[in-house]
Amino acid sequence: MEASLAFFWIFAALAVGGAVGVVAMRQPVHSALFLLVSLLAMAGLFILNNAEFLFAVQMLVYAGGIMVLFLFTIMLVNVRKTKAEPFVHRQAGLALVVGLLLFFVVGGTVIATARQNETEAADPVKLATATFNGKVITGNSQAVAMGLYRDYLLPFEIASVFLLVAMIGAVVLGKRTMEKID
Picture (cartoon, one colour):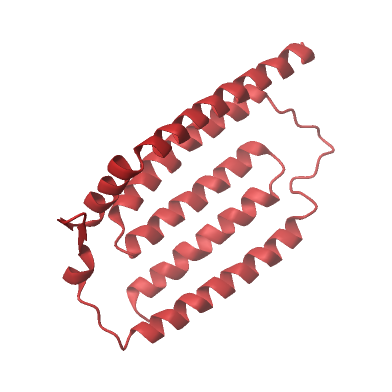
């Protein structure tokens, strides 16, 4: 078996296992940690697909910034645990079955596509070079930057404002819950 295929299966298993853990865990902190495992596995899959820019974004923005935001929000909401609560949700078994089903369906599709593409050898230089509005762009990062900061700047900034509003809303809701408890 080829090394990249072995790494694909390892990262895919970690991503699916992390996703199942997010759904199955009762405590929000445990769910957030499983989400971190899933995000890191996705970053590994991006590296395997030669998407270095997406790897960097996944690591810095999602695995770094968004996870810190989630953990701070969980701490501000101050979820209390009772002793009689089970460790996992009742739907954990169903989540595991659905996760494994998705794992095998997606894995089978990837394997079938890889076998089909083995006969078609692609030139990596040709794939990495593209034209964007008459300008030759080489590389993944430059192509994403041209599209994001030139054509989609306004939606990008609107999304950042929505994230800021969501974070402020979570803090306000957490503060209200704490005032009612105290």
